[in-house]
Image (cartoon, rainbow, N blue to C red; front, side, top):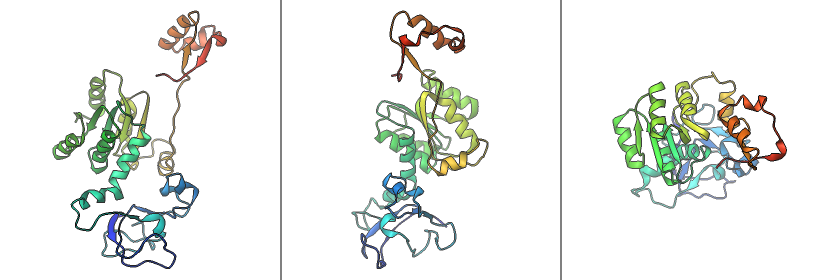
Length: 276
């Protein structure tokens, strides 16, 4: 049982170069070699030699008195603290939930001044609030209904709370964002309803960081995309007029998508651009 831990190195194998007995280390839930292309790209869970703790075989769970760590140099990280440090309970979160919440924020492209929604008030969601705050989000909406967790979320930086679910929850988020939605959504639950809510409350051009393990297969390929860290994006093309003569046509098209197929277009007067 369990797939993350902090511990003290008792002994090292003959091929281990970066660790020594007595080191206080933190480990993630996957073992990786630290040398392959994906490890160098910051995706150790996609390592060509990845193994997951607690999944059976020779990879035992981390809720044990002792644990063998394969590929130790690429898997374990030495912490510059002692075992009696007051930080220890917080450092344990680095082995899973804090890293996961931070990853959600990065994938959702959280930036300074952004509006952010965190779907789920579990450990990962709460760490997502912390991550969004660290990255400078101006508004952080936590979607949850557990009073003790909501209190923590507020301490961590949440500015608004939405306890409703379904259509009511979506409407509340839209009302809190002036009807536009949020720039970034951290989906930290994994249910179909959570993902549906995430898509609905994201503003045009927004991004979703999906880290809740999917409990559904209604979206074709959702599980492979999740486990491969694949980001999917796309939209109708965006055009910004560059001359007064082009502007009326572009303006009408912005409000009536059908105009793209019915209006005559002089493409020499237009250029593609990213909206501000």
